[in-house]
Length: 132
Image (cartoon, rainbow, N blue to C red; front, side, top):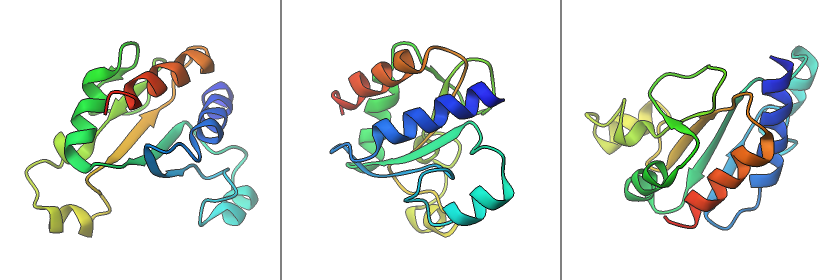
């Protein structure tokens, strides 16, 4: 788990400020609204990084389709990196209003960081971002 978390933190830091993203959230990023609580209560930030793509649902679909190494599935937590876009998959039957009520925005991407080399994960995400 420590490797998942270390890679997730590295990925979150490197994605922060990317012009294709509205925000990046990871508990051990100082910009996270609950950073102080996370640092106090957790030994690491875990293996999930979330970010908001500019461009909504269509950008989310394009992003997932452009990934080359990262797997697209609806489950999270594996030795390999997994990406999900709830607005076009698990929560696609809900209206925009219903998704917002449960915290699923149109461009939300969840990355479950695996055990691959962190630079390989980052490079796949960056090349996919260029295509949305």
